[in-house]
Length: 235
Image 1 (cartoon, one colour):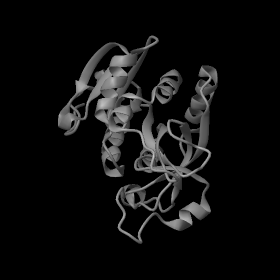
Image 2 (tube, one colour; image 1 turned 180 degrees about the vertical axis):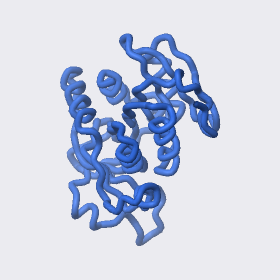
Image 3 (cartoon, helix red, strand yellow; image 1 turned 120 degrees about the vertical axis):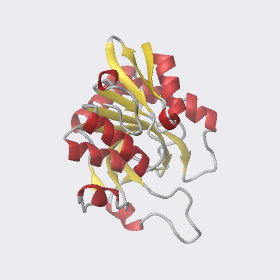
Protein backbone atom coordinates (compact mmCIF):
# COMPACT_ATOMS: atom_id res chain seq x y z
CA UNK A 1 0.00 0.00 0.00
CA UNK A 2 2.04 3.00 -1.19
CA UNK A 3 1.68 6.30 0.67
CA UNK A 4 2.68 9.84 -0.37
CA UNK A 5 6.03 9.17 1.33
CA UNK A 6 6.69 5.49 0.57
CA UNK A 7 6.31 3.74 -2.78
CA UNK A 8 6.94 0.24 -1.44
CA UNK A 9 4.19 -2.32 -1.71
CA UNK A 10 2.95 -3.90 1.49
CA UNK A 11 4.69 -7.15 0.60
CA UNK A 12 8.04 -5.37 0.24
CA UNK A 13 8.17 -4.22 3.87
CA UNK A 14 9.19 -6.75 6.52
CA UNK A 15 7.30 -7.12 9.78
CA UNK A 16 10.33 -5.87 11.70
CA UNK A 17 12.12 -2.64 10.84
CA UNK A 18 15.36 -0.95 11.86
CA UNK A 19 15.01 2.83 11.63
CA UNK A 20 18.07 5.07 11.69
CA UNK A 21 17.56 8.79 11.33
CA UNK A 22 20.01 9.11 8.44
CA UNK A 23 18.83 7.40 5.22
CA UNK A 24 22.49 6.91 4.26
CA UNK A 25 22.94 4.95 7.47
CA UNK A 26 20.02 2.78 6.34
CA UNK A 27 21.86 2.20 3.06
CA UNK A 28 25.05 1.34 4.94
CA UNK A 29 23.31 -1.16 7.24
CA UNK A 30 21.61 -2.85 4.29
CA UNK A 31 24.81 -3.14 2.27
CA UNK A 32 27.00 -4.14 5.21
CA UNK A 33 24.77 -6.64 7.01
CA UNK A 34 21.86 -7.84 4.87
CA UNK A 35 21.64 -10.44 2.12
CA UNK A 36 19.27 -10.49 -0.87
CA UNK A 37 18.82 -6.73 -0.50
CA UNK A 38 16.24 -4.78 -2.49
CA UNK A 39 15.75 -1.01 -2.35
CA UNK A 40 12.03 -0.46 -1.80
CA UNK A 41 11.73 3.32 -1.36
CA UNK A 42 13.52 6.48 -2.39
CA UNK A 43 10.79 9.14 -2.16
CA UNK A 44 12.36 12.36 -0.81
CA UNK A 45 15.57 10.31 -0.60
CA UNK A 46 14.20 8.54 2.48
CA UNK A 47 15.86 5.30 1.50
CA UNK A 48 14.43 1.94 2.53
CA UNK A 49 15.82 -1.53 1.94
CA UNK A 50 14.49 -5.01 2.60
CA UNK A 51 16.70 -8.06 2.88
CA UNK A 52 17.59 -10.96 5.13
CA UNK A 53 19.71 -11.10 8.27
CA UNK A 54 20.60 -14.66 9.23
CA UNK A 55 17.60 -15.85 7.25
CA UNK A 56 15.12 -13.41 8.80
CA UNK A 57 13.35 -10.72 6.78
CA UNK A 58 14.17 -7.18 7.89
CA UNK A 59 13.57 -3.71 6.48
CA UNK A 60 15.91 -0.80 7.17
CA UNK A 61 14.45 2.66 6.55
CA UNK A 62 15.52 6.19 7.42
CA UNK A 63 13.27 8.40 9.51
CA UNK A 64 14.79 11.84 9.01
CA UNK A 65 15.40 14.18 11.92
CA UNK A 66 12.89 15.11 14.58
CA UNK A 67 9.54 13.92 15.85
CA UNK A 68 7.38 15.19 12.96
CA UNK A 69 9.51 13.22 10.49
CA UNK A 70 9.76 9.93 12.38
CA UNK A 71 6.12 10.48 13.29
CA UNK A 72 5.12 10.23 9.64
CA UNK A 73 7.29 7.28 8.63
CA UNK A 74 6.76 5.15 11.73
CA UNK A 75 2.99 5.71 11.72
CA UNK A 76 2.74 4.69 8.06
CA UNK A 77 4.77 1.56 8.69
CA UNK A 78 2.69 0.56 11.70
CA UNK A 79 -0.74 1.54 10.37
CA UNK A 80 -0.57 0.97 6.61
CA UNK A 81 2.19 -1.62 6.18
CA UNK A 82 1.29 -3.79 9.20
CA UNK A 83 4.81 -3.60 10.63
CA UNK A 84 4.94 -5.28 14.05
CA UNK A 85 8.07 -3.70 15.50
CA UNK A 86 10.43 -0.80 14.88
CA UNK A 87 13.82 -0.43 16.55
CA UNK A 88 15.27 3.05 16.22
CA UNK A 89 19.06 2.97 15.79
CA UNK A 90 20.32 6.50 16.28
CA UNK A 91 22.84 8.90 17.75
CA UNK A 92 22.54 10.90 20.96
CA UNK A 93 24.25 13.35 23.27
CA UNK A 94 25.28 11.99 26.66
CA UNK A 95 24.13 13.79 29.80
CA UNK A 96 26.01 11.39 32.07
CA UNK A 97 29.72 11.57 32.84
CA UNK A 98 29.73 7.77 32.94
CA UNK A 99 28.60 7.47 29.32
CA UNK A 100 31.11 8.57 26.68
CA UNK A 101 31.61 8.71 22.93
CA UNK A 102 30.62 5.53 21.06
CA UNK A 103 28.97 4.04 24.16
CA UNK A 104 25.65 2.30 23.54
CA UNK A 105 22.44 3.25 25.37
CA UNK A 106 19.17 1.29 25.35
CA UNK A 107 16.19 3.51 26.10
CA UNK A 108 14.10 2.56 29.13
CA UNK A 109 11.70 5.40 28.36
CA UNK A 110 11.48 8.76 26.63
CA UNK A 111 10.51 12.08 28.18
CA UNK A 112 9.70 15.26 26.29
CA UNK A 113 8.12 18.69 26.53
CA UNK A 114 6.90 18.21 22.94
CA UNK A 115 3.20 18.53 22.08
CA UNK A 116 3.50 15.76 19.46
CA UNK A 117 1.72 13.02 21.42
CA UNK A 118 -1.02 15.37 22.64
CA UNK A 119 -1.75 16.77 19.18
CA UNK A 120 -1.56 13.36 17.52
CA UNK A 121 -3.56 11.31 19.99
CA UNK A 122 -4.52 13.34 23.05
CA UNK A 123 -1.77 11.96 25.29
CA UNK A 124 -1.10 14.51 28.03
CA UNK A 125 1.91 12.89 29.69
CA UNK A 126 5.58 13.72 29.30
CA UNK A 127 6.96 10.17 29.56
CA UNK A 128 6.38 7.14 27.33
CA UNK A 129 7.85 3.66 27.68
CA UNK A 130 9.05 1.37 24.87
CA UNK A 131 8.03 -2.25 24.46
CA UNK A 132 9.49 -4.16 27.39
CA UNK A 133 10.01 -7.31 25.34
CA UNK A 134 12.07 -5.47 22.74
CA UNK A 135 14.10 -3.74 25.45
CA UNK A 136 14.81 -7.08 27.09
CA UNK A 137 15.77 -8.51 23.71
CA UNK A 138 18.23 -5.67 23.10
CA UNK A 139 19.81 -6.21 26.52
CA UNK A 140 20.11 -9.95 25.92
CA UNK A 141 21.63 -9.41 22.47
CA UNK A 142 24.20 -6.98 23.88
CA UNK A 143 25.14 -9.49 26.56
CA UNK A 144 25.43 -12.32 24.02
CA UNK A 145 27.69 -10.18 21.83
CA UNK A 146 29.81 -9.08 24.78
CA UNK A 147 29.01 -5.41 24.20
CA UNK A 148 28.46 -3.11 27.17
CA UNK A 149 25.12 -1.33 26.87
CA UNK A 150 23.80 1.22 29.32
CA UNK A 151 20.08 1.56 29.97
CA UNK A 152 18.48 4.90 30.69
CA UNK A 153 15.82 7.52 30.02
CA UNK A 154 16.03 9.46 26.75
CA UNK A 155 15.12 13.13 26.46
CA UNK A 156 13.51 13.79 23.06
CA UNK A 157 13.65 17.45 22.07
CA UNK A 158 11.97 19.46 19.30
CA UNK A 159 14.92 21.86 19.27
CA UNK A 160 18.54 21.34 18.22
CA UNK A 161 19.75 24.95 18.42
CA UNK A 162 18.59 26.82 21.53
CA UNK A 163 18.85 30.59 21.87
CA UNK A 164 20.96 31.87 24.80
CA UNK A 165 19.07 31.55 28.05
CA UNK A 166 16.72 28.93 26.63
CA UNK A 167 16.93 25.16 26.76
CA UNK A 168 15.24 21.93 27.70
CA UNK A 169 12.64 21.90 30.45
CA UNK A 170 14.68 21.53 33.65
CA UNK A 171 11.76 19.90 35.45
CA UNK A 172 12.06 16.86 33.16
CA UNK A 173 15.67 16.40 34.22
CA UNK A 174 14.63 16.69 37.86
CA UNK A 175 11.74 14.30 37.35
CA UNK A 176 13.50 11.57 35.35
CA UNK A 177 17.05 10.11 35.39
CA UNK A 178 17.88 11.31 31.87
CA UNK A 179 20.92 9.59 30.38
CA UNK A 180 21.01 11.10 26.91
CA UNK A 181 19.20 13.30 24.43
CA UNK A 182 17.95 13.03 20.85
CA UNK A 183 14.89 14.12 18.85
CA UNK A 184 12.76 11.11 17.88
CA UNK A 185 12.02 8.37 20.43
CA UNK A 186 9.09 10.03 22.22
CA UNK A 187 7.13 10.17 18.95
CA UNK A 188 8.11 6.64 17.95
CA UNK A 189 7.01 5.17 21.28
CA UNK A 190 3.73 7.11 21.10
CA UNK A 191 2.97 5.86 17.59
CA UNK A 192 3.61 2.30 18.71
CA UNK A 193 1.24 2.79 21.64
CA UNK A 194 -1.64 4.23 19.57
CA UNK A 195 -1.34 1.53 16.89
CA UNK A 196 -0.85 -1.36 19.30
CA UNK A 197 2.61 -2.19 17.96
CA UNK A 198 6.14 -2.50 19.40
CA UNK A 199 8.99 0.01 19.45
CA UNK A 200 12.34 0.45 21.14
CA UNK A 201 15.42 2.63 20.77
CA UNK A 202 19.13 1.88 20.89
CA UNK A 203 21.56 4.78 20.58
CA UNK A 204 25.25 5.45 20.15
CA UNK A 205 26.73 8.49 21.86
CA UNK A 206 28.06 10.98 19.30
CA UNK A 207 28.50 14.00 21.61
CA UNK A 208 28.67 14.68 25.33
CA UNK A 209 27.45 17.59 27.41
CA UNK A 210 30.76 17.67 29.29
CA UNK A 211 33.29 18.10 26.48
CA UNK A 212 33.69 19.40 22.93
CA UNK A 213 34.49 15.93 21.63
CA UNK A 214 32.15 14.65 18.95
CA UNK A 215 31.93 11.98 16.28
CA UNK A 216 32.41 13.44 12.76
CA UNK A 217 29.56 13.16 10.20
CA UNK A 218 31.15 10.23 8.34
CA UNK A 219 31.49 8.33 11.59
CA UNK A 220 27.82 8.88 12.35
CA UNK A 221 26.82 7.66 8.91
CA UNK A 222 29.02 4.57 8.66
CA UNK A 223 30.14 3.82 12.21
CA UNK A 224 28.22 2.68 15.26
CA UNK A 225 28.61 -1.02 14.41
CA UNK A 226 27.96 -2.25 17.96
CA UNK A 227 24.51 -0.66 18.03
CA UNK A 228 23.68 -2.05 14.60
CA UNK A 229 24.76 -5.58 15.54
CA UNK A 230 22.71 -5.54 18.75
CA UNK A 231 19.59 -4.35 16.93
CA UNK A 232 19.95 -6.89 14.14
CA UNK A 233 20.47 -9.75 16.59
CA UNK A 234 17.29 -8.66 18.38
CA UNK A 235 15.25 -8.71 15.16
